Image 1 (cartoon, helix red, strand yellow):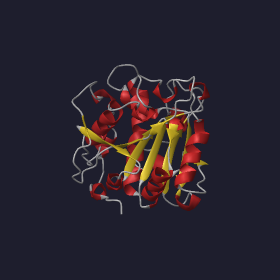
Image 2 (tube, helix red, strand yellow; image 1 turned 90 degrees about the vertical axis):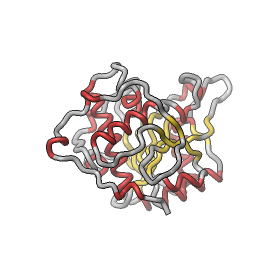
Image 3 (cartoon, helix red, strand yellow; image 1 turned 60 degrees about the vertical axis):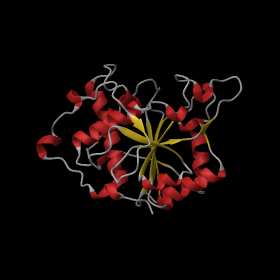
Length: 264
């Protein structure tokens, strides 16, 4: 079973703090940060690592800062998001370290929420797919962020991600979400998806969900941010590249995702 010790921490805001804008206290740029601390029951951000594709003639998954695609944004994205979670909720997560885990690592079952970036470059195998499927069915929740149909870099786009999820959960069917879906109201009230900022992606972001038994009335297993990079706004929050109001919208999504994953 997934160990949901963190769910015991009731996350709440007072009326006053709920109205407070937290952009003025955005995280600073660089702080000491460690990886894979010893599990102690407190919430820790868990990022999934994976083998990534780099077809001949393409830079492929190494196109950004010569890092594998699963590492893009690490560790600033999670470090900054955890500082927001610590300031705005009573979850009090680890903010000085996070977890980086392979999908077939048994330790993953201790972390109810996991995160994957650049999933269009993701390559999996039968062992990893089986482990990911077991994790999701036992109560795990996966956030897939920062991927698109950028075939010119050699990625597989949405089709690659969906095919790999099919290996984990045969017959899985993603649906396009609307602003009425509960995940957009699990903590902050997000009443329009038009407020979600885009950085370098063209067009509108697309939000898709995979639900238990393909039934949208049941628990969501996977939240996919497609054709957008929400974590980019977390990563650069303390560097002055983006305005506070738009950064806030990206943080609201991140907080809602974590709260949903911990309470469903």
